[in-house]
Image (cartoon, helix red, strand yellow):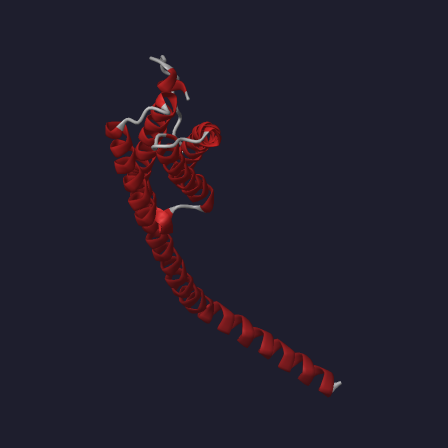
Amino acid sequence: MIQLVDMLSSAGIAAVVSAALTYLFKPLLEARLQRALSAKVEALRAAYVSEHEYLKELIKHNADLYPNLIESVYRSRNIARELQARAPAHDPVLRAELGTHALALVEGLYRARLFLAPELFEPLHQFKRTLEQFVFDYDLATGSSPSHGVESALRDAQKRLDELYQEAVSNAQAALRICSSPRPSSGPDETS
């Protein structure tokens, strides 16, 4: 019986000491845990703010790139359309202007390459390659001995430029979440 009393007495003392220690040290442990969690939360918040600022800067940079690229694409497409309509007659002024816009497109693509997602870069790059082919075909079609097959290739390249223009613009609008508002058309250049 004495052993039972000793055991119960020891268990009771252990329970009282445990409860007392828990009561005394619980606020200290909670405060320490709270400080550790606060430090982790602040580190995560700082990382989030840093990443958020980086993404905002990246979007701003991209927003500055797209208009110039799309302008070059738009102007090149319109000039190519005009040149194709006039072929086999050679128009040196429009041809020189097309070269200027093609060069601006190439330079813009070099500057923007790292910042453009593949779905944005690919149509622009394909447009550039098709434009180069168009210029080559145009120079052949309006040269001293034009070939009839080249005129067909010129028309095909012009159609492909129109398709790639639409794809490039719609992809850029989707990437920037631009809602294009319908506006009245002043002619065929405005609608396609």
